[in-house]
Length: 149
Image (cartoon, rainbow, N blue to C red; front, top):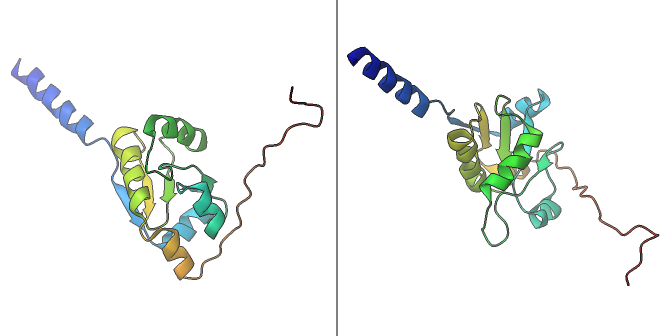
């Protein structure tokens, strides 16, 4: 019985530590990881993307809206369409604060094993004069055959 209790306690400790630690990365590491195929997710708002542009190849997926609200479970569903929990992922925001929060969520509560956070965010990327891509968000339009009644 003591052995069983010991094994259960050990398993609980392992499970509690099963999440990955969030790894802060600088711009050079962001460029290297991205060039090696690690997906970058820009969690800023649409207005921020349009205002500054994005790191080329980033997936755009807002975590906090303009009012500071978030819906982590809904956001996670969309992240899983971009990268599985066993795949590394890089999160970026304006300064590194919001993406640090979202990265901890992915690591601690969602089972993502390797989560990178861009420490100085897009501000640091731009400050280092790294390349910025324009935002190409889809435009929603009515088809020519539809009419409003």
